[in-house]
Image (cartoon, rainbow, N blue to C red; front, side, top):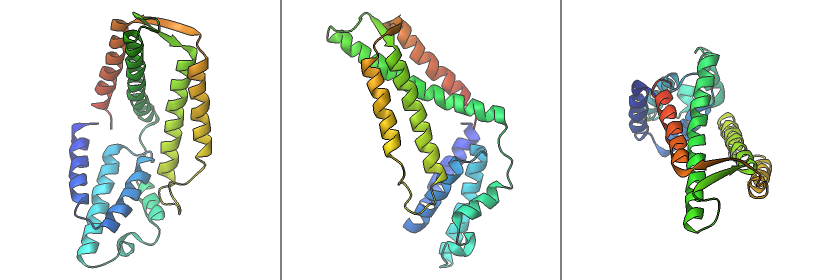
Length: 215
C-alpha cells in the first residue's frame, strides 16, 4: 500500500489500543466490514480513524458506543459507505491481481520448497521440478476458497453468531482440490530449480511494485 496509507494504518493501530476491550471488539467488527467494501484502503483507514476517535470520546464521557454510532453498527457503516465513492473498477481489478500475485508467489514458493525437499530425498524429477495438472488445480482451488471465506467473513462481521457458517462446503472443496493435487499427476511443465526460483522472485517483485502504487 502507499506510504501515507501505511502510516495512517499504524497510527490507527496505536489509537485503537486506548479503547476498552469492548470498544476494541466493536472496532474490529467495523474494520472487518470495511475491508469487504469497495472504497479504497486509504478511505477505510480515514473512516477507521474517525470512528476510533468517536469511540474514545464516548468512553471518556462514560457513554456506551450506541450513543455515538447507534444501535445498529452495520447500518451506521452502510450510511458512511454510501457517502464515499467506490474505487474505479479497473483499480479494484488491479488490487485483486496484486493480492493474487502474492498468494501465487507464496504457493509457488511452497511448491519449490517441496520440490527441493524431494530432490534432497532422492525422489521426484530432480534437478527439474515438475508441475502437474493436479497441483495447478489444487493451487487455484485453494486461492478461490480462501477468497470466498474472507469475503464471507467480511460481509458477516456484525451477524449474530459470527464466524459460524457453512464451513462444510469450503472444507469439502479443499478436500477435493487436495485430492486432485495428489492423484492428478499428469505433468504440464518442468522447470530447472534456478528458473523456478526466478519465477517466485518475479511474482514477489511484481506484487511489491503494484503494492507500492495501490491502496
